[in-house]
Amino acid sequence: MTIEFRDVTKRYPDGTVAVDGLSLTVEDGTITVFVGPSGCGKTTSLRMINRMVEPTAGSVLLDGEDVAARDPAVLRRGIGYVIQHAGLFPHRTVLDNVATVPLLSGWDKRKARARAGELLETVGLPEGLGKRYPAQLSGGQQQRVGVARALAADSPVLLMDEPFSAVDPIVREGLQDELLRLQSQLGKTIVFVTHDIDEAVRLGDKVAVMRVGGKLAQYGTPSEVLRQPVDDFVASFVGRDRGYRGLSFLSAAGVEVSPVHTVEVGSTVDSPSQGWLLAVNNDKQPRGWLPPGSTVDGSLTETDLVAGGSLYIQGTPIRGALDAALSSPASLGVVVDEQLRVLGTVVAHQVLDVIEASPQGS
Ligand SMILES: Nc1ncnc2c1ncn2[C@@H]1O[C@H](COP(=O)(O)OP(=O)(O)OP(=O)(O)O)[C@@H](O)[C@H]1O
Image (cartoon, rainbow, N blue to C red; front, side, top):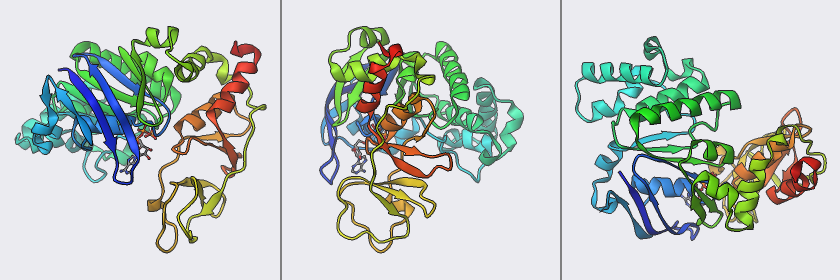
């Protein structure tokens, strides 16, 4: 099934333009990866495919048919969807989690569970795990269950939103291998969102690099994007980072750590916040970000916050600093000490400058 974005724009009610004039076609039976820094509109784009978000202008077509003409609930049931932390129902067994969509589609319980058991096997989990609850599984196992549940929709389209971001790098590689193996058998049309360029290049038949402001910067095969970046943004986001396998060993000593405005959870925030405010607990550990212009009724709670990106522990290799900056909703990577207390922030271009200037960086 092809997925076509035709001049799609999404402006949220507060005026944020999350996606700006996106036009691209995801080809049938391929994996297309939307990649870019936090806040560039990847998730919004993905959610317009299954109508969890409605475009402000333009249209999304599945095999030439505008999704706006489809009943949203039926559409969604027919499209597999996997998110970070798997999004499993905590009070249902693993088997019942996977059987959710078949049950919603009217299958009888036995048949739905039998199918769920097969799917667990498909994603490399022993059927015996089906009786457990999600909390009794490792993070990697939970993600596999998330994939099994999405496959249960038996749809030609699978949407995956940072599905492997919350697991450690080794488990992540295993999950990526598994997805590629599954895809070689299933040939689905997959749209996959990540901020990790290595993951994008590894998984994507095509890669769509997006920039903040919701603009598509480049759309091509991984090798096109790596070898012929269209501009400096793509070059720095894709080109340089890619070249730096040595990043994992490079020190971040030269990276400037800037002070950051913090606000404590539980305190009051008067007047709309200026810029992004980093919320911390009373141990100075980061809890999330308060977006610019937010007003808070009474004292600040975690529900007022946007989840943060990864943290960079000072003294660890520079790769983590880049990852923190790229995954932060505020575009400010949070630097912490070993007790995870906030020290300040770093920005991606500064990290890239340090990498550039290093002997490994040319
Ligand atoms: N419901 C909403 N209301 C207002 N603004 C929103 C809403 N959802 C997202 N945004 C804003 O739209 C922009 C794009 O967000 P989106 O979640 O699509 O980005 P993303 O690239 O997926 O980011 P991340 O990698 O952090 O998930 C951001 O500026 C975000 O703050």
